[in-house]
Image (cartoon, rainbow over all chains, first blue to last red; front, side):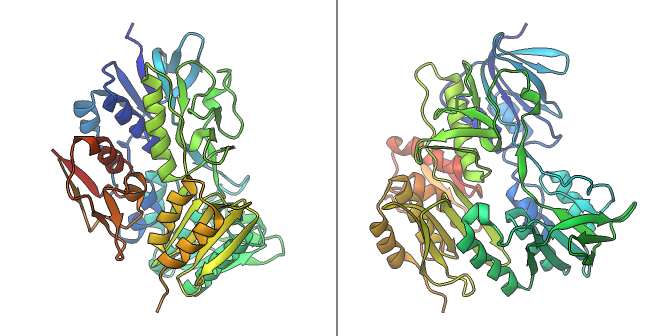
Length: 403
Length: 63
């Protein structure tokens, strides 16, 4: 029987940051990191960008050797947990019951599928290294690419496919792209960027079927239109990987429900990354984020809390994500739900947009296109719960104008 | 203690500046710079935090 230490389920960004943070606090007990993929922990954002456009190598967050030798981690790749029992403080891995003193659930999310549409070859999702390898070999100059879903994965992939010389059509079921990410007004503005880049975006397009027996041939829309396709990417969001927690007694509601310290409601059990739905004190509401920076932040907090001997710390996050479309960098901080979204400077079309989101008299969000300095300073302000007028003034004084 | 910024890797997310504004600042070219005149042990946890949270792995702590 091994000694109970820290067990981290999921070897993505949140899982790696959890083991690093636990070790940094001085935790000397056993640490086990389980990863369902065979690769050492790697960075996902490049998979929809450089990995495709420049055939970049996989970027590791830490090598297997570094985890094993420098952090003394029992790294188990190609293994995952199938159950948790908070009463006995054990995790089931294969036929083994692995005891834990602290547990971090960091199983991430998986690409959502469209029922009945993933049969023929040539229909892809984009989440893992294997997904990206398949797409990289599928796209050639002149390929007819149809992207289902104008979210950030779909948008980035569309830009990369265009760069590789493909003909790209993006289909979005909603009337405006990116509504969930940036709200309706700014979703429309960002949709204009795609048009500028030469991507055909069709909103209100309902996909009825993917045509093709063995290999995809076309996508049929509800209005009868048929779009010939060599490659189809389904980018309709991600679902938290929580199936394995059924029967654990933990509360699952679109993610593992956690308090402000990322505690999942059982002693020593924390969650981090895409799989965690926690109470974010900065906005005093429950949220689940699928962003790089929040996974890193939550991973570190969950790792520390899972091995802490004192009281747990809270996880305060100002959400931040970025997306690179051709040469434009889109950045969003805060939350899109607000009383109003106001363009303070520029426009998406001219590549210098800065918009602020107001809730009451507070600034609660900001969207920038090529406005790096302003956006990151607004992230600080949002975290400090700054008032609206101060944000508007800061935005006006730190933005750049194109030309 | 010294922190090195890989200017080729840095794309100006500004995560380091958000975590430790007294140490890092993103300049007009969108690249992070170290603005603290010197670093001492009191800065170690801030710098480590920034190194770990950099989305591009552009920061390295030496010493």
